Image (cartoon, rainbow, N blue to C red; front, side, top):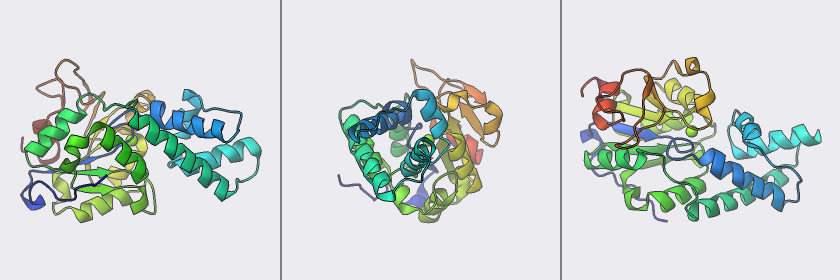
Length: 264
Ligand SMILES: [Mg+2]
């Protein structure tokens, strides 16, 4: 897939920038995507266990697929796994994940398409800022956002950083690459590690809670400018759990502009 790197308008002329997390934010990729793909990889390797929703919820505190696999194998087998074995499992998992996404099993969350489209039309800069692998991100965009892939002028993925979220490196790289003051950027995240990464980079952050993060204590999100239970859209509204409410029961560009710049 060819990823367009040309922003729709010069960044310095953009009203602002949206920095999109991927997993849990664009789509509920974790529970029904990555977890299933890990389980298929475990089965394919002849291992006789699967990760339940609850086990995977706990493993999510470890950033990165290789790291999750390595941790789980160490816990179960009592010895640190051979890195080549972990690498093979991870490659298998990525193949299964791409297949799940290509089959359309993982859909965008409500409001995501609407907001990306509106931001593109209004000339906002948009970037993908994730520490997941580029292949997984490309698979999701190809399946669900092929017609809007040019909306993203910048992709920061796991291969582009040395340290995964909650480290701020991915966001710091995005800020350095976009010709806009960070004060005009909003990070959209769903999780505590993602929020920590964005805030450590100094970014205004909107949290849209996902299946897994919705059960985390709200006080853990206190550094977010707003926490919602989704982006919402007409007919499928959302609500603010922390921070300003919206004139609509969904997030729109005016709301985001107000959140970061107070200029709605
Ligand atoms: Mg996330």
